[in-house]
Length: 112
Image (cartoon, rainbow, N blue to C red; front, side, top):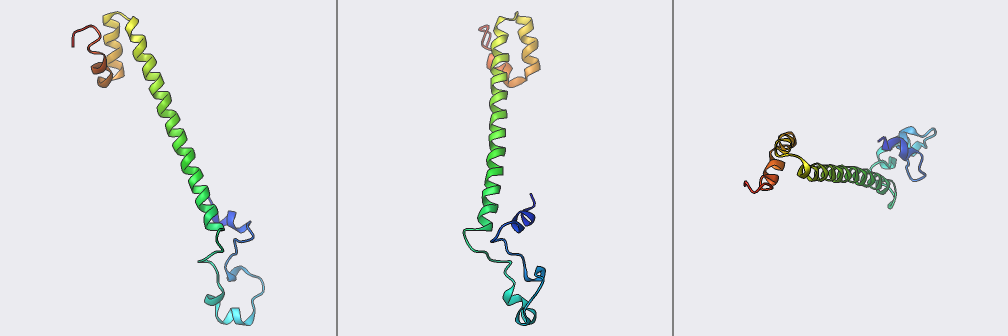
């Protein structure tokens, strides 16, 4: 995300004095007094940056949550489908799914 370029389009996104075409004599003599790159009118540009960052974080969180939910639903369907399998088929399926699923279903036949 290029916040510098986005900021240039805003009225309150004032660039430094070194980018101005015409400087007064006073600005040329003491550029550090007139350069306004470290503080902004608030609310303004930093707030916009924070909103963009916050939106990016929410989008990522939403994607991660959706993926976890889909994985959970897929896992539930797979485990639920294993009850209609023979013991040998169920054992093979549990080996494919991993040890945590196998432990969960170990008591299905009453053998736990």
